[in-house]
Image (tube, rainbow over all chains, first blue to last red):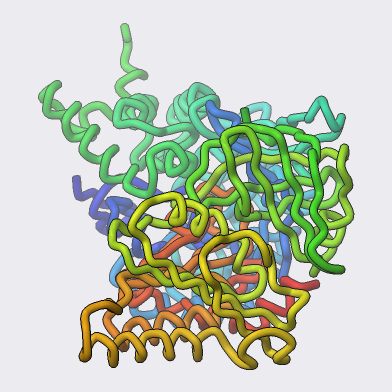
Length: 302
Length: 282
């Protein structure tokens, strides 16, 4: 299942979604050891930020709703983590965010000196008033962020997009034109809200939160399908992927790599190994390969 | 039925006040439960925090709260009839040893998760339980009348029992057994030590157990968000305390460099344990 992504060999095509685990080197390594080809660090921001108070993450059964709110020590306060990661034998994807183009560039320039394999621009988080999604729903703003970061760093840049964009393919196209090396789609959907009818209160402290897990899979598949038609750079497809068949489905929509996050809730940290095996089994049973099925749903007559 | 999905609002059925800072809140609801597991308790508009279950029967459970920070002060002030949101249970709980000679070492409110374990151990036959219970002073000793098992008590200020630390009593117990074992076989060595309390205390208990080749289980505490192993806020080395723990056994503890050294703040910043502890009490 070894694959090559933007020049970096990955032992499997599975990516850990940002915001899930990813808080220290030890847990990233454990995720990698359990079959994830590319673990993603928790999003790194420009300044220390606690995120929201609890409740921040609730399992709705068919997926989760969360408003963790981009907690971060801040990019200048992560020496312990960077020191630990210096001697790693696995690749990492460093997710970053900012409240302005300048902040994105500032964080990206610093993070690039730590030599992660990839930098992922989180221009799509719904859980902060000032950060993220403001960019991801606007093609011009997405273009500005990506092109500024691309000029500042020499590490492959991945733009992570939100399904809240009215035309996600147009955003992806703008990112590609700005020099993005890959697209990651999708971030959480919504935002949604749950209200406890006894206390008559929204359950999440931030009131609204991003939706993930099986209930958003069909949105993710549609987004990857639309993006694949619009761009020629590779796509990391994620959103509700929980099984090998889910992975096959999003690869057929056009994904080169497949991300998982909420699946850890439903299948444990070994979800990656399980899904790798299920992908392998399906490909073997159908006598085909990932390269052959990538974008297969776009073929004429299908 | 309370589940590990969205919180269910439940009414405080009874409240037992232990001292100025401790109270136990009882709820008349069914919850699947294993000693050592925890729930997330939500006070709307305030916060949501993890609490181990301190009493359990088929139709009733309780949490014991120590007023320390903003949330726990509100929780201790709840009265019979007030409502609180509960989801859970979460975590792995204690693995109950099938061997007979057990020590339970509790420090302060660390007695709360251990109490249902002691209940379960007392309910099973052929157990020899040694309960070593420490607190700052007499009034902080939880559930003084609860167990039939004899407890060896110690307090920091000497207001009850031995003046000193639980670890001193544990060492005494182990050494006495070692000496007696040389003379007769009536005082067998300990088969398992369960502990919960300040992490520095648990680390010392674990070190003593290691020195005497006794298996040990400790219950850890970290800042938590999801409760089910996804968000990563509570990582301790490569373990997720909410899902892989909160109870960890000797083999895992040996590999956990963060045990008794490092914990993450709400921002995700790793800090020394004393800095984390003072932040958690705010």
